[in-house]
Image (cartoon, rainbow, N blue to C red; front, side, top):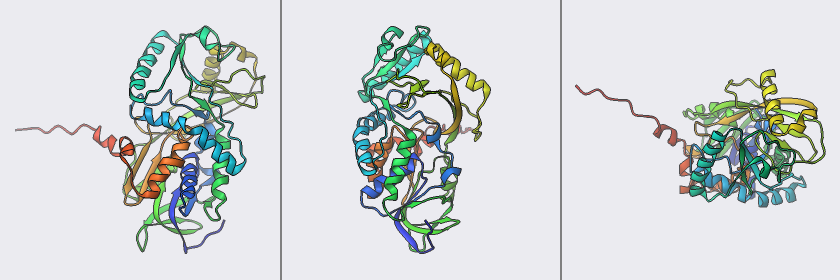
Length: 378
C-alpha cells in the first residue's frame, strides 16, 4: 500500500514478525487504529528458523517469573488458534500432545530435574522424568543411548510459517493496517504529541508506538535514547525428506511436521549477524539426532537453513514503556507467547498501563543486576 505524509493512527507497531504481527492483531481486535510496519523479506525473520514449539517446560531457568508467564501462554494457545483460524481459514497445525527435553547424560538429567522442581514450585507446571524405555511410548524409534528426558504434557507445537501468514492475513483485513516493505528509518517526536514514524515511503503520526522489530529494536530504541541489551544467537535447522508419521511429540532436537518431514536442530551459536550454515554444525546436529533416533540415519536430508534468535541476558521477554507512549516488546519465544502478545500485552498497550504482572519483565531488571562500582574511602 502507498501512504502519504498525512496518515495517522492510534498506535504504530514497528515490526511484522511473529511478535509485531501478534501485537498488531490484538490491538485491532481491541478497536485500536493500527499501522504495522513490516520490513519484509529483508528482515531477520526468526520464524524462518523456528521449530514452532509451544512450550513452557524449558522456560524460566534464569528468571523464575518467566515460568508462570510461559505456562499461561501455553494454556491459552488453543483458544487463540481457534479464533485466528476462524478469522483467516488458515490451519496453524497446533498439536498439544506434550513436549520432551532430552538429557544426554545422567548429570544433565539430574540438573534439569532440579531446575524443573524449582520452577514447578514457582509456576505449578507439571512434568515427568522419563527414561528412554518410557519415552518410547511417546516417541517410537527412540534409542536407549542417553540418560532420559523431561516430559510436559501441556506442551506441543504449531507451524510458525502458517502462524505468521495467518497473523498477516488477519491484520490485512483492516485497510491500511499492514504497511509492507516499509523499513522504519527513524522515530521522531510528533508535532502535536505522540510520535512520527519515518520511512522511505512517507510518514505516519501516532499517539503510541510499539517496538516489536526483534533485532531491529536496537536502532529504534536508540531513536528514543535507550540502549537495549539484546543480542543475536544463530540457530541452524536441517529438514529431511518426508517419512511415514512416527513422532507426535516434539523436542528441541527432533520434531516431525504434519507433512512427514523431520526438523533437526538445537544449535546455539554466538556469531553475530551471520546467517550462513556450516558443515560442522550440520554434522553435529545430524549426529545428535541419529543418537536419539537411529532410524533417521536412513532418512535423507533435503535442505538446511539458519535464523537469528533475539536474546536478552536472561533469555526472558522484555515488556516496558521506555518513553511516554513508547512500548518495547521483545522475546525469542514468538510462537509460545503469541497468544499472550495478542491478548494481554496488546491490552496493556491499548490501555496505556503496564500492570504488576509485567513488572518482572521491565528493562530495568538488567540495570538492577549490574553491581555498583566500589568507592574508595580515604
